[in-house]
Amino acid sequence: MSLSVDLKDLDVLTSNAKQIQDDVLKEILTLNANTEYLQRFLHGSSYKDFFKKNVPVVSYDDVKPYIERVANGEPSDVISGGPITRFLGSSGTTGGKQKIFPINDKYIETLGYLSTLSSLVTSRHFNDKDAKKGKKMLFLYNRSESTTPSGLLVALASTSFVMSPYFTNRPSKCNSDFTSPDQVILCPDNNQSVYCHLLCGLSQRDEVVGVGSSFAYALVQAINVLQIYWKELSSNIRSGHVSKWITDLNCRNSVSAILGGPNPELADVIEKECSNKSWEGIISRLWPKAKYFECIITGQMAQYIPTLEFYSNKLPIVSTIYGSSESLFGINLDPLSKPQDVSYTFLPNISYFEFLPVDHEGEMASIVDLVDVKLGCYYEPVITNYFGLHRYLIGDILEVTGFYNSTPQFRFVRRKNMVLSVEIEETTEEDILKASARATLVLDQSTNLMLTGFTCYADISTFPGHYVFYWELKAKDVNYVVELDENVLAECCYALEESFDSFYRKLRSKDGLIGALEIRVVQEGTFDSLMEYFISQGGSVGQYKTPMCIKSSEALAVLENKVLARFYTKKYLLLDL
Image (tube, rainbow, N blue to C red; front, side, top):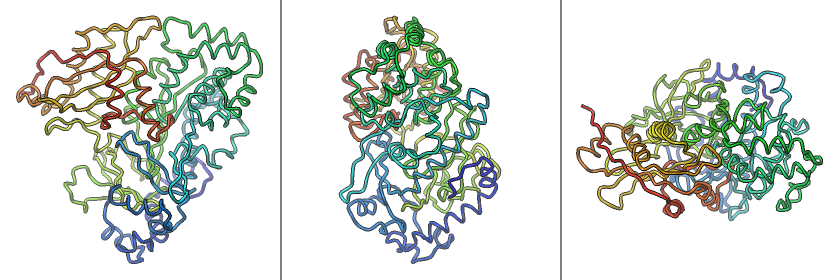
């Protein structure tokens, strides 16, 4: 792949998707056909038809033994014809356990390529003087890398990227395109890092044109930190000195250089805005030239859309890249699309992409190539990459929403296995998000509270089992005391249940096999504690995704210890006639 980036390349790539995909597969098979894994299926062949006929579709458990052998010191050619130089760790918040995937520098280069390409697309849509000369306040973080028994590094994708020469030696570094210096991004202490990100961003408030992070939750967490520390941040700017508890010397010295000395006028502005009774629109007030948020907002991150809109006066939220630890996929070519309408254009030069129809009923022969998917249909991606994954099921469900030239565009719908179920019903991630949006309307119309985080699980410890939603609530006005209205919260329970499908409502109301839905309101800061738990298990602030459905008993205990009150549906659900 050429790493020179030009928007004109998009038309070439997307107009020749079929040929490029065939070339990518040929290159991968030529590289990997004689690995131990592929040799038993291909016997050295690199023909596409032979590959499709003989190589099975697999999941992580199928390839895990081969990955672990390389991690434990066996040669890369167990699974990859190219060198395996490190492993990417998944965040562990989706499936409950961290997985590791082999990569080399090519993955990092591709991530940099996509990041640059998506930035060009975004810049084209915000094309004015401020956007061209402004900076992004990006909340990027580093996390300590671990090693396999053989000494190979294991890190999250975000850490691998910011630690790589591609990032640290980037050409734009000289132009200071971010408000934070690399020393803040690379600081191993995330608490010091987020504070210094805010301090640098506030010091350069008139230059900030975009506010971003990898995932939406990191932005919400940064706003929470701002709400706690704004007086101290203002004091630092007033005096020109960084707080003593910032002990990372590289971080401290680089931030001190950005402060440049006392700035009482700026401190007055910050104090005036932050002491306001309401924090609605605080992002736009503190950073008046900011034109957009930039973060992944699809899937389980969608729950944070109302929070970000509240704090920013509904700045556009740009969801730029679709990717995973297994493979990168594509970019959003319409940055101004509404979060619920975001589609990603797959780039055919990254991996070899196949697609398994959702309704395949076990028939793998129904798998189609990238250019053969059908508009409006639902698929699970099957990827073959350069690093040893061959016909690997990703576990995402996507909908084909259109085509850019000959290349399809996909909307992320949900994770395949993220469902709630008490009996034989299946309530998906998409169902949960739609129901939560409806319940949030009830909350907005009846109270001064906002939902800042939620997750759920199916409680089958009693009969009948029932759905439990954990809600963290916060007052929209800073000095407002959170008061829980039993009738309003019961109505929110009803709104959630009423949004679920007719089969759920039948099992709930007619058959009595599902009990009344329950909302458990937790203390403020509970979802930060949940994040801290997952980070302690190997996650990262920058790559953290609040799990839509809780599967871990340890994570459940974090929530249970913070429950303030419980509410249940009081009404009978209406059944479809």
